[in-house]
Length: 123
Image (tube, rainbow, N blue to C red; front, top):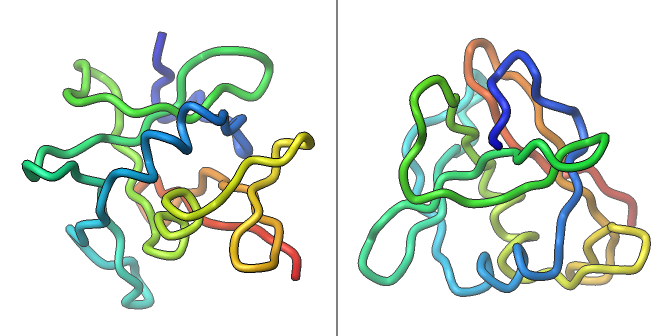
């Protein structure tokens, strides 16, 4: 089951299979946030989008991809920095993602009326 926009948790769980899928995808910018940063989706080699959604699993939900968005499900756009972490990172036992010498998590957030996924991290 996928969650609707009002039910989105702040820090969904990231899984190793999810990162394995993301590693084979490319970032495609589709819009910009209010400050001008690129937002977009991950696409496969054919250009088909893999929409980022949160599955209602566990207390925080779990990041997942879907090819087609079911009715009532709000798409979550990725910041390019979050896409880079997902595509190039490795999952740690604590659920954080190691990427270029730092630890990150991917958080859901709201930029105006747009649901986004952004990185939160420590060096």
